[in-house]
Length: 212
Image (cartoon, rainbow, N blue to C red; front, side, top):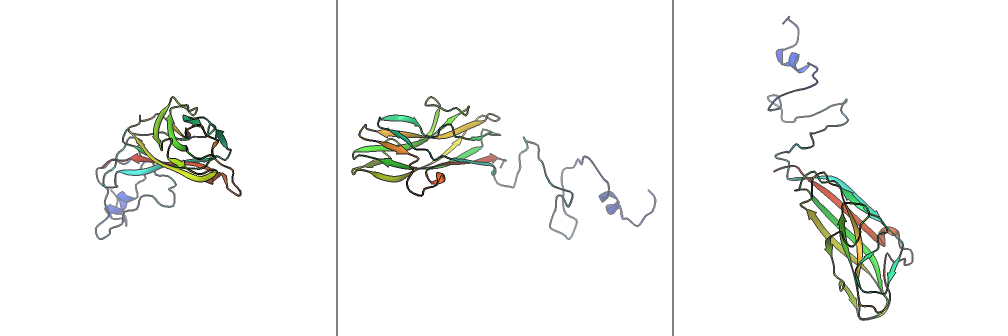
């Protein structure tokens, strides 16, 4: 090529390319920091099915949450009662190795002694979740069991979910459980000055598997 003030390395470096095919990108001799992108860069996109090495096994793909503040009351024993009123969190796994980590809390009330109350997390493939969907975790009906009347307390639950179908969106809700039929049991309790986030909250983190 014609002579210029550019070295061969500088000449190649200043090519404008729409596609670069190579096996290794490395820094020049004497430097140790590799920068991808500059002032023109706003997004760096990777192929959805690409896996990565040397970065750890997982990266956060999405965080979702809902909170709800309308009281739900029952006097009947049950393994499932809807306390979310259609509120859900949702994720779309990219691999069966993806992990969904879920945390929930609920402000509950037990009216009479010798009565139990609990919560659980249900998963469905539709945002309309029912008792026939999949239980991810539940505390059991005796999780909070009191021997005195008129008790307010916080029920909490932690759960992980994996082995899900890639590309299929899944939905999660919190549900209630009751032991015994003695007096009222309440969830999402409206106590003085409580905010909705402190009455009923479900939050989930989707960890995307990115390889070993």
